[in-house]
Length: 108
Image (cartoon, rainbow, N blue to C red; front, top):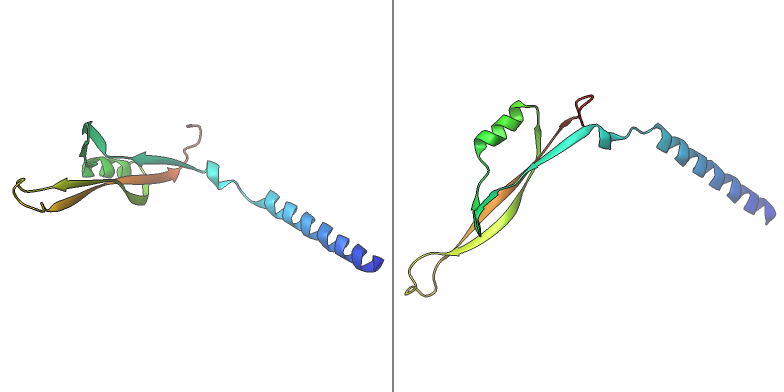
């Protein structure tokens, strides 16, 4: 029984040592990239403006890589006159854009 416990303890120490060594050799990728997000603008209460394609192109020209586009605002609007029952519903979506690029040395 004591040989079994000693062997189990030996295996646990070897695994712990291996895990600690593996974590030490990994690089911290979190510091390698800077991130940026672009959201639709609220121009007045409950009125939004889409992100301009020109702004997205300008970010691409600066070396930003597009990594995600997600619907950020869902807006339901009724169209037609009040006499129409039921009035047709239109859903407008306003996406948000997420970018990354390699961090430039010396710039925070």
